Length: 60
Image (cartoon, one colour):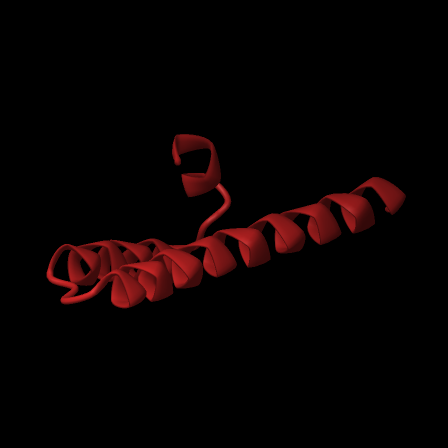
């Protein structure tokens, strides 16, 4: 997670922290999977954003 943390904005980091806390109080495994998928989606979008920014920075 440390590597991904550098890709995340402050808002995304706060959101992931909140989702992780909610995961601790999840009532069912379906809820846990939902929170985990949301966290993974946020990280994936951050990686895509970084790749896009790197691509355009390289072209400049």
